[in-house]
Image: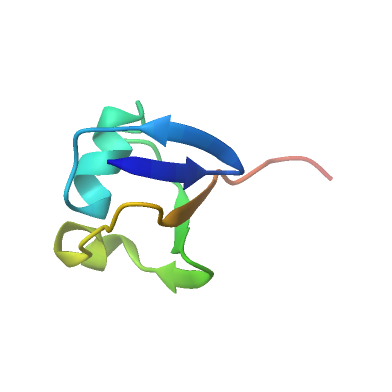
Length: 65
């Protein structure tokens, strides 16, 4: 499946958002996700079905001040 991840094209073998995160190396990372501009909570990622060409944003929290 072809996805646009944080503005970069990726081909992944995944049908759900949780599978895509694992395929992209975010196994247990604490991240926020948005699919096609809509926030997806962590507990809904396993049920969020992907389509070819979807845009995925993955954001990691930053520390500092």
